[in-house]
Image (cartoon, rainbow, N blue to C red; front, side, top):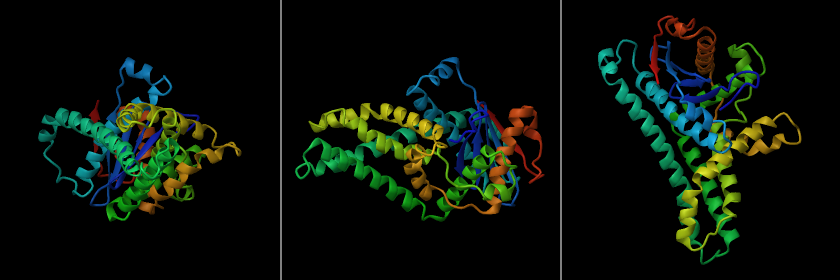
Length: 326
């Protein structure tokens, strides 16, 4: 979720053996194939006038952006997981892919959005029930909200720490670091070489990891404004406030990014950066190459149009560009 202040907003997402970058109208994934070559996947974003208007409304725009991100991200993740460990030429027959393309697009988008919503419900409600178990010991409203927030932070940090121990997620977190490094190099107006990119920080103020942490902090303050008793009302409030917490957290994320170069205010984004110490790892050079290839291909498409989709990458002459129009 990074952006160059002089250019359209560029966002990124780490994938299995690859990185996705997105601009205003295009999203491009580059992955490292089993034979060492780099392959690409392109999705053209099409937005309705209504959606564009919603994106201009504070608080609402964050919800729209998150839902779009979940749907698009699922398509790119599916491409990466289906191709990274398969030799070129061993993919599913193209005719079969074309016949099921619409079903795949709609299905993956729905799964992505539903998975996001389900995860948010669990992440919001489970700590409420845990805090409720301690109500006889900590009956006060303030104590209950603080306890709920503590459980939520513990759940978040434990989950990230546990999954980071698996070899696959470790590599994804390295690609996450590569994604941030590329954006930081771009925002610092540096040529996107492996050496320049590796010299950059693997942390970034507008990362989705920061957003997750902000939902915990922002949620705590919002919950102080509503009752915690009786317990059923507390549950209803938490469910109804999910869009509010997400919307406000998105705006807070934008603010911390806007003031990150102001010495007195840049500390506001530090909690999110600290969480990124867990969700990003220092990438290897070949992973940085993939991230650079993805970002460069996105810039090419935005500058020269979609005719570059069939152009081979200088890093992998054998690469084939797969395209989906939405």
